[in-house]
Amino acid sequence: MRHFIDLLDWDGEQILKLLKDATRIKKATLKGKCKPVLNGKILGMVFEKPSLRTRVSFQAGMAQLGGQAIFLNGTDAGLGKRESLPDIVRTLCEFVDAIVLRTFQHDNVTEFARWASKPVINGLSDYYHPCQAIGDLLTIREAFGDLEGRTLVFVGDGNNVARSLAIACGKVGMRFVLSAPEGYRFDQPFLEIYQTHVRGQLDEIHDPTKAVKEADIIYTDVWASMGQESETKERLKHFAKYQVNAELLKHAMDHVKIMHCLPAHRGEEITDDVMDGPLSVAFPQAGNRMHAQKALLVWALDV
Image (cartoon, rainbow, N blue to C red; front, top):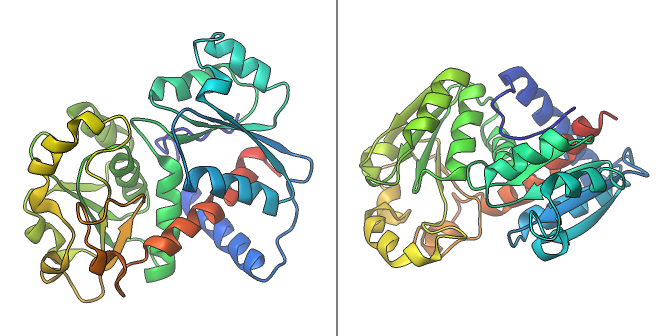
């Protein structure tokens, strides 16, 4: 079964093949020549967490490829509440051809995949966000051409986005640097997973002004994600020196690109002048989520 859970079992060639397919599909879409290869296919979308980009990109992508999507929020699905998770999964698989799950606990994703007779795609969990990572690599590839040898510096929390990006970068020969305050860096279990499954170039440089000196890409994300709202005040204190602003960019190379997975808390992790400035590719990056995911859907459904 072609599940897409965390990118750990993908190699660099597979990722690059997916990106080439995404580029081809994107070009066809922009020319109005996107083939309806998913005609008659149904995507089930089960989202415990709110979503703008993930929901719309998957629904629009399915429509552009000739398929349809059915959306269920957490209450509709009632994961583990109204009925057991295995029963929900096996029921859904009677109706749809693939499932995108956006959830809090990563165990929910692996459990979905365990019981599913159709492909399961991780649309975000508290530990990984692989769909974001493939869209990001597509954006970097468009900006720089070859990915190998490039350096991405993630300034912020070592969260689910950072973990998936670190894995994706390592698989395609990119250097990944995390610049985060103490207590918000990668956890030891993840570092062990990375060394076992990726073995790429991963560094942690605590001073952001030093971290960005060799960056081709500076990437940031909100300091308090969904489910961490109670920690916001404490996190604002710890991350105050990790804002991506004009002063930080003075330490970076002229060709650097600025990326953000959105939503952005402007004035916190990034300033307006940088977010809306000429170096930012944040909104094309958001658009590339759809094109990368269309290639992913075609792969998962094997059409």
